[in-house]
Length: 576
Ligand code: ARG
Image (cartoon, rainbow, N blue to C red; front, side, top):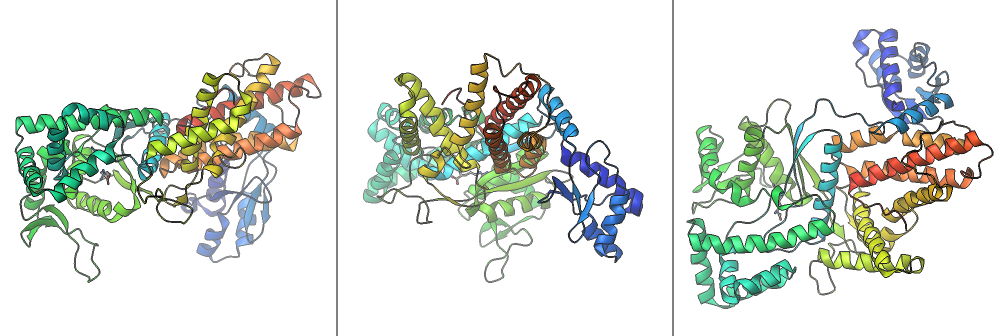
């Protein structure tokens, strides 16, 4: 099967060469959705500017060279110089037919396949996951799934914050309360309380603060007993993190941690290398890189601090060592940092240093997939009434409770209800997040996320269950449907055409690390299906051929929606 955008692009490219010579064959065919047809090409507009000719005239000449026989009606020039395409119903039907027969549902595997490191979630030991981590986790996981589906070799890496001065006070607190109590608290997610108790003693009790500082020194020196206690903290936090990832249905496991401590032994060498290359210089007692193009308010070059004047290393040093490791040792072609917008400048400086150092060369890419803020109704960072960070677990609990209320009257069996409420609740929160462009902020709103209509998780889940119920009533297996697709009604045409966009939706989502594009595509498909369902009786179709075709279109819709939701990490319950 072929995506109409790709086919039209090829034809326009051929016509560009034929009409204006090979020099113009490389121009972007600029295929876009059209208000008056299915698609349009805007290629004539920039070309006319280049040639200094009227755009409609250039468009007419281009259209004269276009061969779309069998694919679309003869192209029409419209507006300032657009070329409009209306696809032929038979062509759409044939494409839908082969999409139905295709395991990959018309999304070709990426060629070449790349090695991609995705740095996401950004958890910290002895810190609770809050709603800010939700996005960096859920978006990163969708990006990972999409890239893997397209055939890329993906390395999941959570840059776990497990090192630094707070560990002195945290370890002393473990000694005070005991290892068992530590486990009980951390694994159960009572992490903020644990952290705050340590912090409170640190500020109030000078003797404790003193012990904490000595403990940091022993940690840095690699003292055995200190390392063991530190490991207890890490392991207890991992128990909490893995449980939460599992609950969130996120594919991160403890094997995917690339903790800060891992880079610790590499830091001195990285500093040495950068200093030898002249990229890092001493400034006021600290070793710093001053990547070009970064200046402070006063116009002075901004430093990325690599070694503090006390000899210690920091967050920046670790990130520089991490990017070196990813590019030089792991041979990544692409690194995607799914991290909050407040770390933008930091990451851009790290990338700039990697470029200067010659690690980020050739076709390799490092990119910051910026994550925006989750806010309350007031547009400010989401907080509890007490002004604290909203715990992820509390949020998920509430989502499940509310989802249970939504579906309560439909299920007698409490176990079943709970199972579906879980899928709907978690799905609603994840989809609510994934449907928003990842770099814009959004207001967290249960009512919006759980609505059964509109661009929501439950709406999409519900569309799949409706299709399943059609097949149940017919006594048929949707996975086996392979009937002949015919396009008659406008709603059939619109649905089939929407479905053909799966490949490009995935391609775009992968290229820009933007899962919301896939979400928007799925919503389009579900909306087209809703109209189809209202206007085109499936089981009561006027004749057997139409019924077979409508069943085939329904089955294809189910497969595309299920696959797409799966790639977003949104569960698809069989009934709702
Ligand atoms: N743990 C960090 C934080 O809580 C996020 C890590 C992001 N990734 C990175 N390579 N810096 O802010």
